[in-house]
Length: 166
Ligand SMILES: [Zn+2]
Image (cartoon, rainbow, N blue to C red; front, top):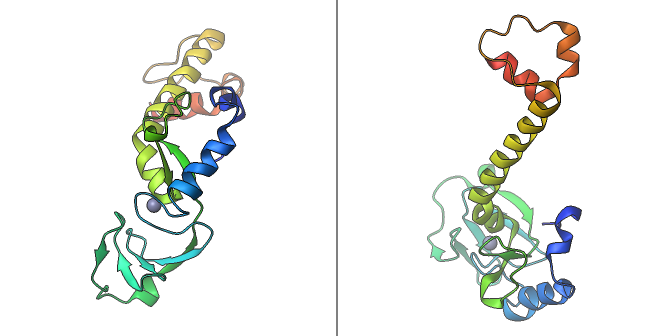
């Protein structure tokens, strides 16, 4: 996952070396949660199960070996390229302790970060609304039929959505 420019200062100056060490030396180019290989395309069923071409068996999203699927894999299966990233297990980019980092494929990384992403999305929405209140006044409450097209054009998309929903 690319590092946002506004977060780049949180990472240590040798982050590229740390990341490379975690992904390719410690993890040997495989996701440390599910085992998918970096830089290759894997065939998967969309629910986490994937075909391990090196060991010639199916694996679950957790990486453990599972039975061959009974459903039609040709209609459900898809090919996906795997890209390993070095993930912060505790969502703190300032802490580069090797025990708190993991080499994760994009699927495992998204699953691991899902709760943190939800929290940040909520915080960003609150910040945006707070800024809107600062410059345009408080949000209109229920039954805001006093909004005119001129007033609506001054509001950003989030505020218009809020007005339309209320
Ligand atoms: Zn994975």
